Length: 78
Image 1 (cartoon, rainbow, N blue to C red):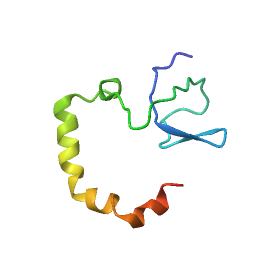
Image 2 (spheres, rainbow, N blue to C red):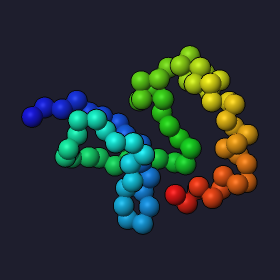
Image 3 (cartoon, helix red, strand yellow):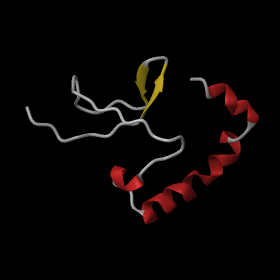
Image 4 (spheres, one colour):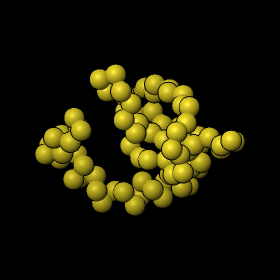
């Protein structure tokens, strides 16, 4: 069975990798885990160019105040 590689972001915590999204059409697969420096994401690896990234940033700006509020720190441990 031949598969195209898929990239899914996750978090390593307490010896386990928790995926932030579920890959479509994948019941079981071998994986490679790469540990990234905090805050580092290579957009081109995810198929996003600078114009698309700028558009995404602009669309998400209305949420920044909420995300950065002290109350949101409760979600950091999830």
